[in-house]
Image (cartoon, rainbow, N blue to C red; front, side, top):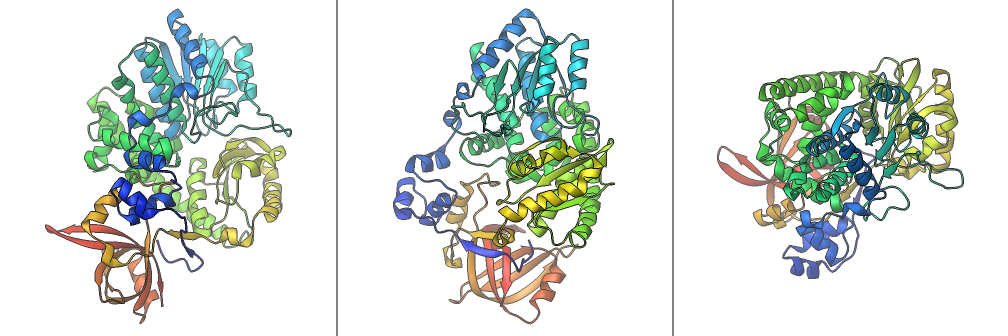
Length: 575
Protein backbone atom coordinates (compact mmCIF):
# COMPACT_ATOMS: atom_id res chain seq x y z
CA UNK A 1 0.00 0.00 0.00
CA UNK A 2 1.30 3.42 -0.85
CA UNK A 3 0.59 6.44 1.25
CA UNK A 4 -2.78 7.95 0.45
CA UNK A 5 -2.61 11.60 1.47
CA UNK A 6 -6.41 11.72 1.76
CA UNK A 7 -6.67 8.68 4.00
CA UNK A 8 -7.64 9.35 7.59
CA UNK A 9 -6.01 7.27 10.31
CA UNK A 10 -8.65 6.23 12.81
CA UNK A 11 -8.03 4.66 16.22
CA UNK A 12 -10.71 2.28 17.47
CA UNK A 13 -12.31 3.55 20.66
CA UNK A 14 -14.44 0.57 21.67
CA UNK A 15 -14.70 0.02 25.41
CA UNK A 16 -14.43 -3.14 27.49
CA UNK A 17 -12.69 -4.51 30.56
CA UNK A 18 -9.61 -5.52 28.57
CA UNK A 19 -7.62 -6.60 31.63
CA UNK A 20 -10.51 -8.73 32.87
CA UNK A 21 -11.01 -10.35 29.46
CA UNK A 22 -7.25 -10.93 29.16
CA UNK A 23 -7.21 -12.74 32.49
CA UNK A 24 -10.33 -14.75 31.69
CA UNK A 25 -8.99 -16.04 28.35
CA UNK A 26 -5.25 -16.07 29.12
CA UNK A 27 -4.39 -13.49 26.47
CA UNK A 28 -2.77 -10.07 26.58
CA UNK A 29 -4.90 -6.92 27.01
CA UNK A 30 -3.72 -5.86 23.54
CA UNK A 31 -5.20 -9.02 22.01
CA UNK A 32 -8.40 -8.56 24.01
CA UNK A 33 -8.67 -5.03 22.59
CA UNK A 34 -8.21 -6.29 19.02
CA UNK A 35 -10.95 -8.90 19.43
CA UNK A 36 -13.32 -6.28 20.86
CA UNK A 37 -12.50 -4.06 17.87
CA UNK A 38 -13.93 -6.84 15.65
CA UNK A 39 -17.35 -6.29 17.27
CA UNK A 40 -16.98 -9.25 19.62
CA UNK A 41 -18.62 -8.15 22.87
CA UNK A 42 -19.70 -10.64 25.52
CA UNK A 43 -17.49 -13.24 27.24
CA UNK A 44 -19.54 -15.91 25.43
CA UNK A 45 -18.70 -14.30 22.07
CA UNK A 46 -15.03 -14.03 23.08
CA UNK A 47 -15.00 -17.73 23.90
CA UNK A 48 -16.60 -18.62 20.55
CA UNK A 49 -14.12 -16.37 18.72
CA UNK A 50 -11.05 -17.87 20.40
CA UNK A 51 -12.14 -21.46 20.92
CA UNK A 52 -15.05 -22.03 18.52
CA UNK A 53 -14.97 -25.29 16.61
CA UNK A 54 -17.16 -27.64 14.61
CA UNK A 55 -19.45 -28.18 17.61
CA UNK A 56 -20.39 -24.51 17.45
CA UNK A 57 -21.81 -24.59 13.91
CA UNK A 58 -25.48 -23.66 13.75
CA UNK A 59 -28.32 -26.13 13.32
CA UNK A 60 -29.13 -26.21 9.57
CA UNK A 61 -32.83 -26.89 10.18
CA UNK A 62 -33.16 -23.31 11.40
CA UNK A 63 -32.91 -22.24 7.76
CA UNK A 64 -36.33 -21.63 6.17
CA UNK A 65 -37.76 -24.56 4.15
CA UNK A 66 -34.71 -26.68 4.97
CA UNK A 67 -36.63 -29.75 6.10
CA UNK A 68 -39.11 -29.32 3.25
CA UNK A 69 -36.26 -29.14 0.69
CA UNK A 70 -34.61 -32.25 2.16
CA UNK A 71 -37.92 -34.15 2.15
CA UNK A 72 -38.62 -33.28 -1.50
CA UNK A 73 -35.15 -34.38 -2.58
CA UNK A 74 -35.34 -37.61 -0.55
CA UNK A 75 -38.71 -38.48 -2.10
CA UNK A 76 -37.46 -37.75 -5.62
CA UNK A 77 -34.27 -39.77 -5.08
CA UNK A 78 -36.38 -42.69 -3.83
CA UNK A 79 -38.58 -42.49 -6.97
CA UNK A 80 -35.51 -42.44 -9.23
CA UNK A 81 -36.34 -38.97 -10.53
CA UNK A 82 -33.80 -37.01 -12.55
CA UNK A 83 -32.39 -34.09 -10.57
CA UNK A 84 -30.41 -31.30 -12.24
CA UNK A 85 -28.32 -28.86 -10.22
CA UNK A 86 -28.19 -25.32 -11.61
CA UNK A 87 -25.14 -23.43 -10.36
CA UNK A 88 -23.25 -20.26 -11.11
CA UNK A 89 -19.93 -19.57 -12.82
CA UNK A 90 -18.03 -18.01 -9.91
CA UNK A 91 -16.14 -19.72 -7.08
CA UNK A 92 -19.22 -19.83 -4.83
CA UNK A 93 -21.39 -21.37 -7.54
CA UNK A 94 -18.68 -23.85 -8.56
CA UNK A 95 -18.12 -25.03 -4.97
CA UNK A 96 -21.90 -25.22 -4.40
CA UNK A 97 -22.34 -27.45 -7.45
CA UNK A 98 -19.51 -29.75 -6.32
CA UNK A 99 -20.93 -30.05 -2.81
CA UNK A 100 -24.45 -30.90 -4.01
CA UNK A 101 -23.37 -33.18 -6.87
CA UNK A 102 -21.07 -35.17 -4.58
CA UNK A 103 -23.82 -35.55 -1.99
CA UNK A 104 -26.67 -36.43 -4.36
CA UNK A 105 -24.54 -39.06 -6.09
CA UNK A 106 -23.58 -40.45 -2.67
CA UNK A 107 -27.30 -40.77 -1.90
CA UNK A 108 -27.90 -42.68 -5.14
CA UNK A 109 -29.59 -39.86 -7.03
CA UNK A 110 -29.75 -39.65 -10.81
CA UNK A 111 -28.17 -36.21 -10.64
CA UNK A 112 -26.28 -34.02 -13.06
CA UNK A 113 -25.53 -30.30 -13.22
CA UNK A 114 -25.46 -27.32 -15.53
CA UNK A 115 -23.73 -23.97 -15.11
CA UNK A 116 -24.85 -20.94 -17.12
CA UNK A 117 -22.21 -19.50 -19.41
CA UNK A 118 -21.37 -15.99 -18.33
CA UNK A 119 -21.56 -14.39 -21.77
CA UNK A 120 -24.23 -16.49 -23.46
CA UNK A 121 -26.59 -16.90 -20.49
CA UNK A 122 -25.71 -14.33 -17.87
CA UNK A 123 -26.32 -14.98 -14.21
CA UNK A 124 -28.66 -17.59 -12.83
CA UNK A 125 -31.29 -20.03 -14.05
CA UNK A 126 -32.87 -19.00 -17.35
CA UNK A 127 -35.49 -20.08 -19.87
CA UNK A 128 -33.01 -22.00 -22.05
CA UNK A 129 -31.85 -24.10 -19.08
CA UNK A 130 -35.46 -24.84 -18.13
CA UNK A 131 -36.53 -25.85 -21.64
CA UNK A 132 -33.46 -28.07 -22.04
CA UNK A 133 -34.25 -29.69 -18.69
CA UNK A 134 -37.80 -30.42 -19.86
CA UNK A 135 -36.47 -31.91 -23.11
CA UNK A 136 -34.04 -34.09 -21.13
CA UNK A 137 -36.80 -35.44 -18.88
CA UNK A 138 -35.54 -33.70 -15.74
CA UNK A 139 -38.00 -33.88 -12.85
CA UNK A 140 -36.36 -31.53 -10.32
CA UNK A 141 -34.18 -28.44 -10.70
CA UNK A 142 -32.04 -27.66 -7.64
CA UNK A 143 -30.48 -24.19 -7.75
CA UNK A 144 -27.44 -23.13 -5.76
CA UNK A 145 -26.04 -19.62 -5.37
CA UNK A 146 -28.90 -18.37 -7.56
CA UNK A 147 -32.64 -18.59 -8.02
CA UNK A 148 -34.02 -16.19 -5.44
CA UNK A 149 -34.68 -13.50 -8.08
CA UNK A 150 -35.78 -15.86 -10.89
CA UNK A 151 -39.52 -15.42 -10.36
CA UNK A 152 -40.62 -15.72 -14.01
CA UNK A 153 -38.14 -18.47 -14.87
CA UNK A 154 -39.18 -20.67 -11.96
CA UNK A 155 -42.85 -20.05 -12.75
CA UNK A 156 -42.13 -21.38 -16.26
CA UNK A 157 -40.45 -24.49 -14.84
CA UNK A 158 -43.38 -25.23 -12.54
CA UNK A 159 -45.80 -24.73 -15.47
CA UNK A 160 -43.79 -27.30 -17.43
CA UNK A 161 -44.14 -29.80 -14.59
CA UNK A 162 -40.62 -29.46 -13.21
CA UNK A 163 -40.28 -29.06 -9.46
CA UNK A 164 -37.81 -26.40 -8.34
CA UNK A 165 -35.92 -26.26 -5.05
CA UNK A 166 -33.99 -23.03 -4.53
CA UNK A 167 -30.88 -22.73 -2.36
CA UNK A 168 -29.44 -19.23 -2.40
CA UNK A 169 -28.02 -16.52 -0.18
CA UNK A 170 -28.56 -13.34 -2.18
CA UNK A 171 -30.68 -10.39 -1.07
CA UNK A 172 -34.40 -10.64 -1.75
CA UNK A 173 -36.27 -8.02 -3.76
CA UNK A 174 -39.30 -6.39 -2.19
CA UNK A 175 -42.48 -4.73 -3.40
CA UNK A 176 -42.95 -0.97 -2.80
CA UNK A 177 -44.98 -2.02 0.26
CA UNK A 178 -42.00 -3.93 1.65
CA UNK A 179 -43.20 -7.48 0.91
CA UNK A 180 -40.64 -10.06 -0.16
CA UNK A 181 -40.83 -11.11 -3.80
CA UNK A 182 -40.23 -14.87 -3.80
CA UNK A 183 -40.22 -17.26 -6.76
CA UNK A 184 -42.97 -19.94 -6.86
CA UNK A 185 -40.59 -22.79 -6.01
CA UNK A 186 -41.42 -25.92 -4.00
CA UNK A 187 -38.90 -24.87 -1.34
CA UNK A 188 -36.70 -21.80 -0.90
CA UNK A 189 -33.71 -22.16 1.43
CA UNK A 190 -32.22 -18.70 1.92
CA UNK A 191 -30.99 -17.20 5.23
CA UNK A 192 -32.08 -13.73 4.03
CA UNK A 193 -35.78 -14.65 4.17
CA UNK A 194 -37.61 -12.65 6.83
CA UNK A 195 -39.01 -15.82 8.39
CA UNK A 196 -35.56 -17.37 8.77
CA UNK A 197 -34.60 -18.44 12.30
CA UNK A 198 -30.96 -18.95 11.34
CA UNK A 199 -28.72 -17.00 13.75
CA UNK A 200 -26.24 -15.74 11.16
CA UNK A 201 -27.60 -14.74 7.72
CA UNK A 202 -24.33 -13.72 6.03
CA UNK A 203 -23.30 -17.12 4.69
CA UNK A 204 -22.43 -17.88 1.06
CA UNK A 205 -24.29 -20.11 -1.39
CA UNK A 206 -21.91 -23.03 -0.83
CA UNK A 207 -22.59 -22.83 2.92
CA UNK A 208 -26.34 -23.08 2.26
CA UNK A 209 -25.63 -26.11 0.05
CA UNK A 210 -23.36 -27.59 2.73
CA UNK A 211 -26.12 -27.20 5.34
CA UNK A 212 -28.58 -28.97 3.04
CA UNK A 213 -26.13 -31.86 2.62
CA UNK A 214 -25.73 -32.10 6.39
CA UNK A 215 -29.48 -32.56 6.80
CA UNK A 216 -29.70 -35.10 3.95
CA UNK A 217 -26.80 -37.13 5.36
CA UNK A 218 -28.09 -37.00 8.93
CA UNK A 219 -31.54 -38.14 7.77
CA UNK A 220 -29.93 -41.13 6.05
CA UNK A 221 -27.68 -42.00 8.99
CA UNK A 222 -24.46 -41.21 7.11
CA UNK A 223 -21.37 -40.64 9.26
CA UNK A 224 -20.66 -37.04 10.27
CA UNK A 225 -17.14 -37.21 8.81
CA UNK A 226 -18.60 -37.69 5.33
CA UNK A 227 -20.34 -34.33 5.20
CA UNK A 228 -17.40 -32.72 6.99
CA UNK A 229 -15.23 -33.76 4.01
CA UNK A 230 -17.11 -31.09 2.06
CA UNK A 231 -16.27 -28.39 4.62
CA UNK A 232 -13.12 -27.30 2.76
CA UNK A 233 -15.22 -26.41 -0.32
CA UNK A 234 -17.60 -24.36 1.84
CA UNK A 235 -14.57 -22.60 3.35
CA UNK A 236 -13.08 -21.97 -0.10
CA UNK A 237 -16.33 -20.38 -1.28
CA UNK A 238 -16.76 -18.30 1.88
CA UNK A 239 -13.38 -16.64 1.31
CA UNK A 240 -13.73 -16.46 -2.49
CA UNK A 241 -17.16 -14.83 -2.30
CA UNK A 242 -15.77 -12.27 0.20
CA UNK A 243 -18.16 -13.17 3.00
CA UNK A 244 -17.42 -11.55 6.37
CA UNK A 245 -15.08 -13.78 8.41
CA UNK A 246 -17.21 -13.44 11.50
CA UNK A 247 -19.30 -15.77 13.63
CA UNK A 248 -19.94 -19.11 11.91
CA UNK A 249 -18.04 -18.13 8.76
CA UNK A 250 -14.83 -17.70 10.74
CA UNK A 251 -15.17 -21.17 12.26
CA UNK A 252 -15.87 -22.77 8.88
CA UNK A 253 -12.88 -21.10 7.23
CA UNK A 254 -10.56 -21.86 10.15
CA UNK A 255 -11.55 -25.54 10.20
CA UNK A 256 -11.68 -25.81 6.41
CA UNK A 257 -8.17 -24.41 5.97
CA UNK A 258 -6.86 -26.96 8.48
CA UNK A 259 -8.33 -29.74 6.37
CA UNK A 260 -6.62 -28.49 3.20
CA UNK A 261 -3.31 -29.74 4.65
CA UNK A 262 -4.49 -33.32 4.15
CA UNK A 263 -7.30 -32.90 1.61
CA UNK A 264 -8.35 -35.95 -0.38
CA UNK A 265 -9.64 -33.68 -3.16
CA UNK A 266 -7.26 -34.36 -6.07
CA UNK A 267 -8.14 -31.11 -7.83
CA UNK A 268 -7.39 -28.93 -4.83
CA UNK A 269 -4.13 -30.78 -4.22
CA UNK A 270 -2.99 -30.24 -7.82
CA UNK A 271 -4.06 -26.57 -7.79
CA UNK A 272 -2.04 -25.98 -4.61
CA UNK A 273 0.93 -27.75 -6.21
CA UNK A 274 0.75 -25.74 -9.47
CA UNK A 275 0.85 -22.52 -7.46
CA UNK A 276 3.88 -23.72 -5.46
CA UNK A 277 2.11 -23.42 -2.10
CA UNK A 278 2.61 -25.46 1.07
CA UNK A 279 -0.64 -27.38 1.77
CA UNK A 280 0.03 -27.15 5.51
CA UNK A 281 0.31 -23.35 5.42
CA UNK A 282 -2.67 -22.27 3.27
CA UNK A 283 -4.23 -19.06 4.59
CA UNK A 284 -7.36 -17.15 3.66
CA UNK A 285 -5.07 -14.85 1.65
CA UNK A 286 -3.94 -17.76 -0.55
CA UNK A 287 -7.55 -18.79 -1.16
CA UNK A 288 -8.70 -15.25 -1.91
CA UNK A 289 -5.79 -14.08 -4.06
CA UNK A 290 -4.02 -17.16 -5.47
CA UNK A 291 -6.15 -20.32 -5.59
CA UNK A 292 -9.64 -18.81 -5.79
CA UNK A 293 -8.85 -16.64 -8.84
CA UNK A 294 -7.69 -19.77 -10.69
CA UNK A 295 -11.13 -21.35 -10.15
CA UNK A 296 -12.83 -18.10 -11.16
CA UNK A 297 -10.70 -17.75 -14.29
CA UNK A 298 -12.45 -20.62 -16.07
CA UNK A 299 -15.87 -19.03 -15.63
CA UNK A 300 -14.49 -15.69 -16.76
CA UNK A 301 -12.55 -16.59 -19.89
CA UNK A 302 -13.95 -20.01 -20.89
CA UNK A 303 -16.48 -22.11 -18.99
CA UNK A 304 -16.80 -22.86 -15.28
CA UNK A 305 -17.14 -26.51 -16.31
CA UNK A 306 -13.32 -26.68 -16.11
CA UNK A 307 -13.30 -25.67 -12.44
CA UNK A 308 -16.10 -28.10 -11.56
CA UNK A 309 -14.32 -30.90 -13.43
CA UNK A 310 -11.14 -30.15 -11.50
CA UNK A 311 -12.84 -30.30 -8.09
CA UNK A 312 -14.77 -33.48 -8.96
CA UNK A 313 -11.85 -35.23 -10.69
CA UNK A 314 -10.91 -38.72 -9.53
CA UNK A 315 -7.99 -39.04 -11.97
CA UNK A 316 -4.54 -37.70 -11.11
CA UNK A 317 -3.47 -36.97 -14.70
CA UNK A 318 -6.73 -35.20 -15.51
CA UNK A 319 -6.54 -33.14 -12.30
CA UNK A 320 -2.93 -32.17 -13.07
CA UNK A 321 -3.85 -31.07 -16.61
CA UNK A 322 -6.88 -29.06 -15.48
CA UNK A 323 -5.00 -27.38 -12.62
CA UNK A 324 -2.25 -26.31 -15.03
CA UNK A 325 -4.77 -25.00 -17.55
CA UNK A 326 -6.58 -22.99 -14.85
CA UNK A 327 -3.35 -21.43 -13.63
CA UNK A 328 -2.45 -20.44 -17.21
CA UNK A 329 -5.92 -18.95 -17.69
CA UNK A 330 -5.55 -16.93 -14.51
CA UNK A 331 -2.18 -15.55 -15.67
CA UNK A 332 -3.88 -14.47 -18.90
CA UNK A 333 -6.72 -12.94 -16.91
CA UNK A 334 -4.25 -10.82 -14.89
CA UNK A 335 -2.84 -9.21 -18.05
CA UNK A 336 -6.29 -8.50 -19.46
CA UNK A 337 -7.40 -7.05 -16.12
CA UNK A 338 -4.54 -4.56 -16.08
CA UNK A 339 -5.50 -3.34 -19.55
CA UNK A 340 -9.07 -2.79 -18.32
CA UNK A 341 -7.92 -0.96 -15.18
CA UNK A 342 -5.74 1.39 -17.25
CA UNK A 343 -8.62 2.20 -19.63
CA UNK A 344 -11.07 2.75 -16.73
CA UNK A 345 -8.64 4.99 -14.86
CA UNK A 346 -8.30 7.20 -17.96
CA UNK A 347 -12.08 7.74 -17.92
CA UNK A 348 -12.20 8.24 -14.15
CA UNK A 349 -9.57 10.95 -14.37
CA UNK A 350 -11.12 12.50 -17.45
CA UNK A 351 -14.77 13.07 -18.39
CA UNK A 352 -16.21 11.24 -15.34
CA UNK A 353 -13.83 12.67 -12.76
CA UNK A 354 -16.41 14.85 -10.98
CA UNK A 355 -19.01 12.08 -10.60
CA UNK A 356 -19.71 10.72 -7.15
CA UNK A 357 -20.75 7.38 -8.66
CA UNK A 358 -18.39 6.20 -11.41
CA UNK A 359 -20.18 4.67 -14.39
CA UNK A 360 -17.43 3.77 -16.85
CA UNK A 361 -18.32 2.28 -20.25
CA UNK A 362 -15.51 0.11 -21.64
CA UNK A 363 -17.08 -1.48 -24.75
CA UNK A 364 -14.12 -3.75 -25.50
CA UNK A 365 -13.35 -4.96 -21.96
CA UNK A 366 -14.05 -8.68 -21.50
CA UNK A 367 -17.33 -8.64 -19.60
CA UNK A 368 -16.15 -11.29 -17.18
CA UNK A 369 -13.46 -8.91 -15.92
CA UNK A 370 -15.80 -5.99 -15.26
CA UNK A 371 -16.18 -6.85 -11.56
CA UNK A 372 -12.45 -7.11 -10.96
CA UNK A 373 -11.80 -3.83 -12.80
CA UNK A 374 -14.61 -2.18 -10.82
CA UNK A 375 -13.01 -3.36 -7.59
CA UNK A 376 -9.60 -1.98 -8.52
CA UNK A 377 -11.04 1.39 -9.56
CA UNK A 378 -13.12 1.55 -6.37
CA UNK A 379 -9.96 0.97 -4.33
CA UNK A 380 -8.05 3.64 -6.23
CA UNK A 381 -10.67 6.42 -6.10
CA UNK A 382 -12.81 5.29 -3.15
CA UNK A 383 -16.03 5.83 -5.09
CA UNK A 384 -18.86 3.42 -5.95
CA UNK A 385 -17.86 2.08 -9.37
CA UNK A 386 -19.79 0.44 -12.19
CA UNK A 387 -17.89 -0.98 -15.17
CA UNK A 388 -20.03 -1.50 -18.28
CA UNK A 389 -19.11 -3.58 -21.33
CA UNK A 390 -20.80 -4.32 -24.66
CA UNK A 391 -22.17 -7.86 -24.88
CA UNK A 392 -24.73 -9.92 -26.75
CA UNK A 393 -26.75 -7.04 -28.15
CA UNK A 394 -26.87 -5.09 -24.88
CA UNK A 395 -24.60 -3.67 -22.21
CA UNK A 396 -23.67 -5.68 -19.14
CA UNK A 397 -22.21 -4.20 -15.99
CA UNK A 398 -20.69 -5.06 -12.67
CA UNK A 399 -20.35 -2.81 -9.65
CA UNK A 400 -18.27 -2.58 -6.48
CA UNK A 401 -19.18 -0.21 -3.69
CA UNK A 402 -18.00 1.69 -0.62
CA UNK A 403 -19.52 1.26 2.85
CA UNK A 404 -21.76 4.33 2.56
CA UNK A 405 -23.44 3.24 -0.68
CA UNK A 406 -25.87 0.28 -0.80
CA UNK A 407 -25.37 -0.87 -4.38
CA UNK A 408 -28.35 -3.24 -4.64
CA UNK A 409 -30.74 -0.55 -3.36
CA UNK A 410 -29.21 1.94 -5.79
CA UNK A 411 -30.04 -0.39 -8.69
CA UNK A 412 -33.57 -0.92 -7.40
CA UNK A 413 -34.07 2.86 -7.72
CA UNK A 414 -33.27 2.72 -11.46
CA UNK A 415 -34.63 -0.73 -12.24
CA UNK A 416 -36.90 0.68 -14.97
CA UNK A 417 -33.70 1.16 -17.03
CA UNK A 418 -32.43 -2.37 -16.44
CA UNK A 419 -33.10 -5.63 -18.23
CA UNK A 420 -31.87 -7.73 -15.30
CA UNK A 421 -30.03 -7.11 -12.04
CA UNK A 422 -29.08 -8.57 -8.67
CA UNK A 423 -26.49 -8.35 -5.94
CA UNK A 424 -25.46 -7.26 -2.46
CA UNK A 425 -24.87 -3.95 -0.64
CA UNK A 426 -21.22 -4.00 -1.80
CA UNK A 427 -21.46 -5.62 -5.24
CA UNK A 428 -23.96 -6.02 -8.06
CA UNK A 429 -24.42 -7.18 -11.64
CA UNK A 430 -26.91 -5.99 -14.26
CA UNK A 431 -27.69 -5.51 -17.95
CA UNK A 432 -29.35 -2.68 -19.89
CA UNK A 433 -29.84 -1.37 -23.41
CA UNK A 434 -26.88 0.66 -24.72
CA UNK A 435 -29.07 3.71 -25.37
CA UNK A 436 -29.79 3.84 -21.60
CA UNK A 437 -26.16 3.99 -20.46
CA UNK A 438 -25.95 7.77 -20.17
CA UNK A 439 -29.34 8.01 -18.45
CA UNK A 440 -28.21 5.25 -16.05
CA UNK A 441 -25.09 7.28 -15.20
CA UNK A 442 -27.08 10.50 -14.79
CA UNK A 443 -29.74 9.04 -12.50
CA UNK A 444 -27.31 7.08 -10.32
CA UNK A 445 -25.38 10.28 -9.74
CA UNK A 446 -28.53 12.32 -9.16
CA UNK A 447 -29.61 9.82 -6.51
CA UNK A 448 -26.06 9.54 -5.18
CA UNK A 449 -25.90 13.29 -4.61
CA UNK A 450 -28.71 12.90 -2.07
CA UNK A 451 -27.19 10.05 -0.09
CA UNK A 452 -23.40 10.49 -0.34
CA UNK A 453 -21.59 13.06 1.79
CA UNK A 454 -18.04 14.40 1.21
CA UNK A 455 -16.67 12.39 4.14
CA UNK A 456 -17.94 9.14 2.56
CA UNK A 457 -15.22 9.41 -0.09
CA UNK A 458 -12.34 9.67 2.35
CA UNK A 459 -10.79 6.22 2.93
CA UNK A 460 -10.14 5.28 6.54
CA UNK A 461 -7.24 3.27 7.90
CA UNK A 462 -8.32 1.68 11.16
CA UNK A 463 -5.73 1.22 13.90
CA UNK A 464 -6.23 -1.26 16.73
CA UNK A 465 -3.81 0.35 19.17
CA UNK A 466 -0.96 2.84 19.34
CA UNK A 467 1.54 0.17 20.36
CA UNK A 468 5.22 0.92 21.08
CA UNK A 469 7.80 -1.40 19.56
CA UNK A 470 8.83 -2.51 23.07
CA UNK A 471 5.61 -4.58 23.27
CA UNK A 472 6.56 -6.73 20.29
CA UNK A 473 7.83 -10.19 21.18
CA UNK A 474 7.44 -13.80 20.07
CA UNK A 475 4.61 -14.36 22.53
CA UNK A 476 2.53 -11.52 21.10
CA UNK A 477 3.11 -12.66 17.52
CA UNK A 478 2.10 -16.21 18.46
CA UNK A 479 -1.01 -14.86 20.18
CA UNK A 480 -1.97 -12.75 17.15
CA UNK A 481 -1.88 -15.90 15.00
CA UNK A 482 -4.80 -17.21 17.09
CA UNK A 483 -6.93 -14.45 15.55
CA UNK A 484 -6.62 -15.91 12.05
CA UNK A 485 -8.10 -16.41 9.51
CA UNK A 486 -7.89 -12.77 8.49
CA UNK A 487 -10.05 -11.22 5.82
CA UNK A 488 -13.26 -9.29 5.29
CA UNK A 489 -14.74 -8.46 8.72
CA UNK A 490 -11.79 -9.95 10.62
CA UNK A 491 -8.97 -7.81 9.30
CA UNK A 492 -5.35 -8.38 10.22
CA UNK A 493 -4.53 -6.22 13.29
CA UNK A 494 -2.84 -2.88 12.65
CA UNK A 495 -0.81 -0.82 15.12
CA UNK A 496 0.67 2.66 14.90
CA UNK A 497 3.73 4.57 16.04
CA UNK A 498 4.50 8.24 15.51
CA UNK A 499 7.72 10.24 15.21
CA UNK A 500 10.06 7.38 14.32
CA UNK A 501 13.55 8.13 13.13
CA UNK A 502 14.58 6.41 9.88
CA UNK A 503 18.21 5.37 10.42
CA UNK A 504 18.60 3.67 7.06
CA UNK A 505 16.59 2.88 3.92
CA UNK A 506 17.35 0.33 1.22
CA UNK A 507 15.32 -0.51 -1.89
CA UNK A 508 15.23 -4.29 -2.50
CA UNK A 509 13.94 -6.91 -4.90
CA UNK A 510 14.46 -7.67 -8.54
CA UNK A 511 11.57 -5.33 -9.38
CA UNK A 512 12.62 -2.85 -6.67
CA UNK A 513 9.21 -3.37 -5.03
CA UNK A 514 10.29 -3.57 -1.39
CA UNK A 515 12.01 -1.19 1.02
CA UNK A 516 13.99 -2.22 4.11
CA UNK A 517 13.95 0.38 6.89
CA UNK A 518 15.77 0.70 10.19
CA UNK A 519 13.38 2.46 12.58
CA UNK A 520 14.10 3.94 16.04
CA UNK A 521 11.42 5.29 18.38
CA UNK A 522 11.72 8.26 20.73
CA UNK A 523 12.99 6.01 23.54
CA UNK A 524 15.82 4.69 21.37
CA UNK A 525 14.21 1.27 20.78
CA UNK A 526 14.86 0.04 17.25
CA UNK A 527 13.28 -2.48 14.90
CA UNK A 528 13.61 -3.32 11.22
CA UNK A 529 10.68 -2.55 8.94
CA UNK A 530 9.71 -3.77 5.49
CA UNK A 531 7.44 -1.87 3.06
CA UNK A 532 6.04 -3.57 -0.03
CA UNK A 533 5.65 -0.74 -2.53
CA UNK A 534 7.35 0.97 -5.45
CA UNK A 535 10.76 1.38 -3.79
CA UNK A 536 12.10 4.18 -5.98
CA UNK A 537 8.91 6.18 -5.56
CA UNK A 538 9.07 5.69 -1.79
CA UNK A 539 12.66 6.94 -1.68
CA UNK A 540 11.76 9.92 -3.87
CA UNK A 541 8.80 10.76 -1.64
CA UNK A 542 10.96 10.50 1.45
CA UNK A 543 13.63 12.83 0.09
CA UNK A 544 15.71 14.28 2.89
CA UNK A 545 13.08 13.69 5.57
CA UNK A 546 14.03 11.25 8.33
CA UNK A 547 10.94 11.23 10.57
CA UNK A 548 8.00 8.98 9.81
CA UNK A 549 4.65 7.87 11.30
CA UNK A 550 3.71 4.28 10.48
CA UNK A 551 0.82 1.84 10.61
CA UNK A 552 2.30 -1.63 10.99
CA UNK A 553 1.86 -5.31 11.75
CA UNK A 554 4.53 -7.22 13.73
CA UNK A 555 5.97 -10.39 12.29
CA UNK A 556 9.05 -12.63 12.27
CA UNK A 557 11.70 -12.47 9.58
CA UNK A 558 13.53 -15.74 8.93
CA UNK A 559 16.56 -15.49 6.66
CA UNK A 560 19.60 -17.75 6.31
CA UNK A 561 18.63 -19.60 9.46
CA UNK A 562 18.41 -16.41 11.50
CA UNK A 563 15.18 -15.29 13.13
CA UNK A 564 14.41 -11.66 14.01
CA UNK A 565 11.39 -9.51 14.82
CA UNK A 566 10.32 -6.97 12.24
CA UNK A 567 7.31 -4.84 11.33
CA UNK A 568 5.49 -4.81 8.01
CA UNK A 569 4.65 -1.16 7.31
CA UNK A 570 1.15 -0.87 5.81
CA UNK A 571 0.81 2.93 5.66
CA UNK A 572 3.07 5.87 6.40
CA UNK A 573 3.35 9.64 6.60
CA UNK A 574 6.64 11.51 6.37
CA UNK A 575 7.21 14.55 8.55
